[in-house]
Image (cartoon, rainbow, N blue to C red; front, top):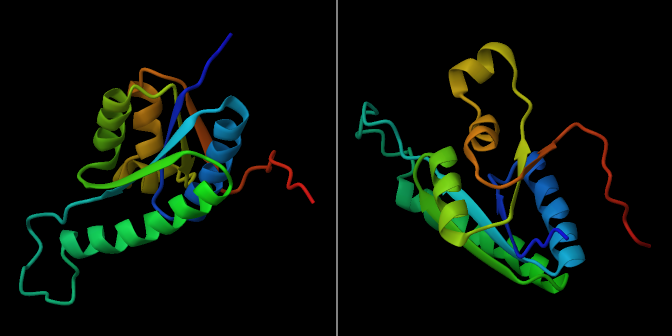
Length: 153
């Protein structure tokens, strides 16, 4: 029997990641698993001119992300799911993989923007990197794919 005890669901607040949270909720409820929500704030490249005062600092982005993430966590708790949440500054795929190991998760569920070609090559793919390097199963939820979760009522 497969027993899923802890699910990691990274989210960047995109449509794809919100869809991934819905999947994570259903898996958590169905398996009696805990859910860990994670947002990763990417540090600014060091070459950025620091005189650009309108560019928010990582700390500001982290604070805003923490508030948004707590709203998502509260909504999931109201659905009866045991939820923890955290915001970390770092490289998304590295932080996701590190946190998956630290938490000893059984499943990672994350959204994918579905970028292909040059945009994927230039931007990299967090989902692709996580799938390749994770030591547990990974479910990728695409923003534009068919929805398999049915709403009750």
